[in-house]
Length: 428
Ligand code: AMP
Ligand code: GLY
Image (cartoon, rainbow, N blue to C red):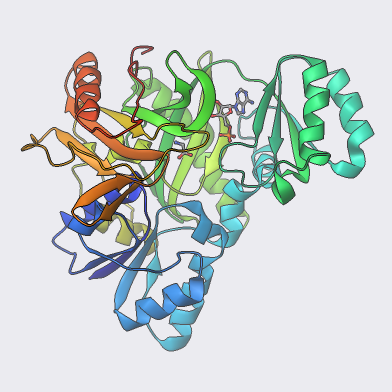
């Protein structure tokens, strides 16, 4: 079959690598892709959120399965559009991702909080306020325990969350949303949320509407600086599995979060098909949901995919067509550590366009993978084109070794301004 993968990051390079292993794949197209995905298929110049153009491409190139990498096309309604249009044209095109209604679980924090509250899914207590309710919001903050978390309701590229240590700071932060409008329309509604103290974990379920399979969990490192200091980023690296994700904890997560979430969706009359990513905090022994995402994580995917021994394409087809029941995953028991090489200035003003070396420096072993994220071909050179540039993953039975070797692999990549975190996994 022909497959169209949407996106251009390290996550999509990892998906492309994995799907290319499948003997069910005829041709893979990636829109828009990157220098790494080009090794596994044909990069095409399509905007993933322009759903009509994506559909026209699918018709022209006989695509049977569309795999959205990030949330934007899902929030834009790509699944609904393609399914309706394909049915009208008598074509079989499925999308391994949920509907626009389901995508609100990621697209609106107010929507997802209300969903969790309706279905008794453990999460931090929260209340939502609009700009017109400023006095009410201030009164609520004055009696709230500190720290407190303020969140923009809409998509803010991971930057719409403020953790405030004092009432004064929290009151002042409201101005960022409603006076300075720093988050635009995404900050029109603000959630005031209880602060959860604990350790974070990313859990991934691939769902077909009724059934699901759990992928290996991961821990993502969001802060730019060593020891979890400095600004939040899209993710400086990942470890899979985090040793604290014991079988008991994973069972608890399935019982109290994954199953109630899917049952809640079914009871509301919707079929959730595709990846469901639960970002959670382990508070004591109790997992609590911080957020839902309707896609895989990045850079978690670059740690998780190299561990997956099952046929990803077969799983995605089964998820998109309601046939996951009875399928089981085969997973490499080794640890995967992914270190992300970033551009100078990240996550602030980026220093871009420098030629890179070390990308194809030698023959890599079976347990080493390099994923392109923000790279671009310029003639014979590869240059850095985004904040996160390359993800370097190493598999090793020993977590410390995996971390040490992942860092060494990342450090083979050189360009002006390049840096990475050197302490991944040390907290585990
Ligand atoms: P989110 O955009 O919801 O993933 O939030 C970004 C980050 O803020 C999370 O990864 C957490 O580190 C932190 N965070 C969000 N909500 C809370 C909370 N209720 N308590 C503590 N930390 C939080
Ligand atoms: N690494 C977190 C995310 O993809 O949202």
